[in-house]
Image (cartoon, rainbow, N blue to C red):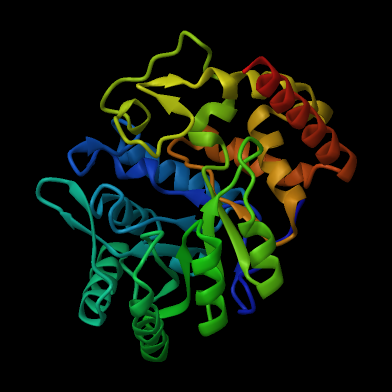
Length: 335
């Protein structure tokens, strides 16, 4: 069984796999388009959180905009009386309307807003401190970075947060932030079908690499095929240009082909596809912490069991790399 990992250079310890709380936020909109994972049952979500804790998953990653506060509220309910057992990460920076459940791409990282956002998150989570407070927008103006860092340091001094980081996949901006701040982590997309230079950047700076979309929005679960169709009220069926693995509710065929090509390696040794995908991420670095989206107890159980397998071996990692490079070469020749 994999042990806990230090969060950057802090003394905060997190489970090797986290619980992504985006799905338990339920339905909400991003600039008028669906941005949730369909309907959700709060009682089931709470049972999933409780089951995760029972099995050793104690790192929960949410955001104020997931369900415009609903995800934080559900997490707070589930952890009532058990707050000391969990490490909570949440995010701020996007503006939203709780009444209409609409999130806007307009960002606000002013000092006053950061304080108000933190207060609201603390209230919804039912806690007096947040373990990891993260900037949510992946891009903020260069002339605001120092101001944001100062605001986050002030929150640490007040005891409202224990550590902070940034959810970004921009290596240049991340380098600047890491050099100027006392950040503990960067959160960014990472999975076996989409690698990221952010892994090496985090390693250079001694920071934790928190990995969202480790299952490629569910595609790596293996439950989708070329005839699958998700509804328009699911983020994967929305019109968001940044949704990479699904288009108009259908899985992108090239990603299905790539998954088929590496399926045997991922599932060797008795792993499920989900477990193989998580084990690949651990194989990328000892400082990686994948946070698959979870909303059912069975999903928490499957993710927790991955920790018993540990990272893929260097040989398995190399084999997957070789297969995917050859597949890319074939596609390029055909194109």
